[in-house]
Amino acid sequence: MSRIQMSNWGAQPPAMRQSSITAWLKKPPSVTPEPPSETRETRETRETLATSKFTLPPLPANVELVPLTDDLMPAFKRLLVLTLPIPYPPAFFAETMQKPFHGLTLLAVWQSTPPKTTANNANTATRDSGNSRRVVGAIRCRILPSSMLYISTISLLAPYRSHGIASHLLYNIVTKAAKEHGVTRVTAHVWEANEDGLEWYAKRGFEVVGKEDSYYSKLKPAGAVLVLKPIGVADLLAVKDAAGARDG
Ligand SMILES: CC(C)(COP(=O)(O)OP(=O)(O)OC[C@H]1O[C@@H](n2cnc3c(N)ncnc32)[C@H](O)[C@@H]1OP(=O)(O)O)[C@@H](O)C(=O)NCCC(=O)NCCS
Image 1: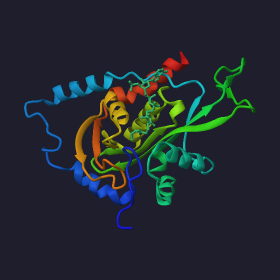
Image 2: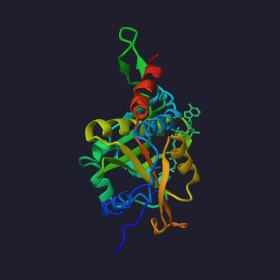
Image 3: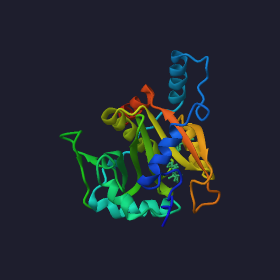
Image 4: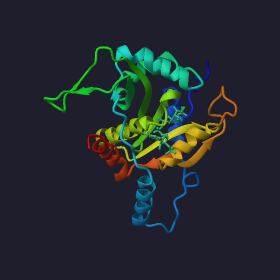
């Protein structure tokens, strides 16, 4: 097959597409124009304002964010089949278990009941043996050159949306990637017809910086919108603040 199929709504196809993404992101200022009169200070202020528009709600008490493990792999694969329009090849999942992809992948597990805290130690969460656990969402990323975090996939099972879970997945990985890989920007391809996805990114401070007309060879329309956001202080504090709100 001459071209591996794109398999998501804003996700990245397998590794060989990276060069085209990188080339796109390295395009000259005509693609991502900088206002000539804008100073560094005003740009930083604008970016801070853009990020601070979004306040991360606390993660629901019955949701855990966990790394991908072999036993969770079938649930991860199933999640992508159910939430994204084109299947991913086995190589994608094999790669996900390797560095650095594994450290940039996070799953959301929904428990039927929240972890209990004991009277003796309020910080000790215990598991109820009858508690059912289900993988309901995941984010999977890669690192691109130019200190860029690229979101390969992010999705939630429909019944579990609008609880802030995807936002927590995003900000947890952004924070980790900033600390461990020094990324300063985060980017993603979004299928041009995925209005909800585009709106979700926009509300989190992502801006449209380009479009590739024939990105998704098996989807109609075939175009992908490239969204990008500089990582600001507010992004790095979002998870901490939300955790504080949950604890308090
Ligand atoms: C896009 C997607 C990942 C968002 O997942 P999600 O878990 O619903 O996202 P969040 O809960 O973080 O945010 C959704 C909305 O719920 C709101 N919300 C969060 N917690 C809430 C709560 N407790 N009560 C009510 N609303 C809440 C958020 O504020 C947000 O609204 P906003 O976008 O108007 O600000 C999900 O819709 C999805 O999987 N779509 C299909 C795949 C896809 O399109 N992926 C993205 C493009 S590649």
